[in-house]
Length: 448
Image 1 (tube, rainbow, N blue to C red):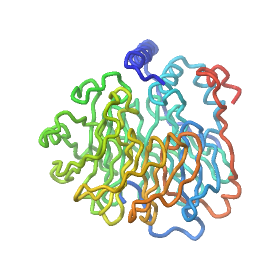
Image 2: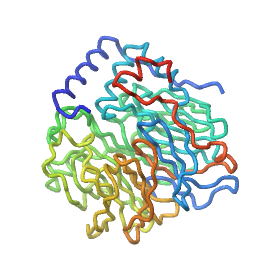
Image 3: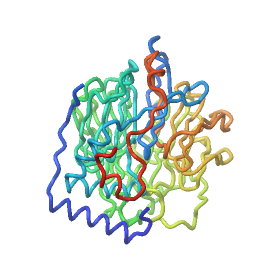
């Protein structure tokens, strides 16, 4: 892993030089042959069963958990085309340069094979964004094969969000500075909208009529002083019309933070969640241990909640992609927030009104995502450094159970699977080979 600023700067300079020399890379759509932060439908079809998906980013698999027992019931290979993608990358110098840069600057020396995932409403497909491959794929839960593939603008895909009706999914194109809107059924692009540097988190709001979106800027750049906004690229927090895909509002976070005396706090929004009535937005920010509450109508920060910093002597350059905290989710009552204290290795449940937090829950390393359970009783949290996920009771602020999953779990999502298909899935392993050296994955692309 490239911890030092000079080393990271060297890799970045190499990539930018190669990119300039080789010219832009087009990324057309490609179809293969064959509470607030996440919709939680009150009822599902009798033909499907509820599950929990956990994406194992460095392994290239997604674990499927039973939400009642929280035990793993299946595992999906999300890179069945690994050999073909690696051959494609190895024979394209532009793609290869960025692939290696993503591995070192963002993947901590590892390939990023699954960032986000959602199931279709009928439980037949799982849609997955794959950062290192710069694409989104839909995998059939019956055949385990890719039924469509969409290559995003640029070379890296990231966070996604699914519309409340399950028909559309939006995906951030990290290096393309746009967000694509795709049809879940066939992967066709039905729209896109502009973002800032490194588009990141999106949330459907207002019943699916609008999208709240944030970009985070260059979190892998060597200049990590949050006061130097210009060095981190353009960071935005905006509202987009989900029909026309026009930006209808852009918040001035720099002005809002400065008004609260937070002039040394970064404007890069990390995960976010909303109150049940969607009038308040709770934002995690780069390098900030805690969160701020933003009034959606006025754009003013109305509360600042600081949480324990257990790594006060850790240099900013060693923060994981600038993430002091990365994971926050509101319960359906609006009385409790579950927060991942990423760099400090804890989770905690917070009363957003008073700022009081529960005891610090330390059940693993590098917690990196929080999702409320479909019924709102628990928050699910991934411990990316320990390869486990836990469910924490919102009411008691205690861990109910912890489950072992694959290598480097990140996103956790509620979903459904068609009844009878879980038995077909089994416990597959990834098509991606275990790397024995930093170069083996692309030196032997046909060996996957």
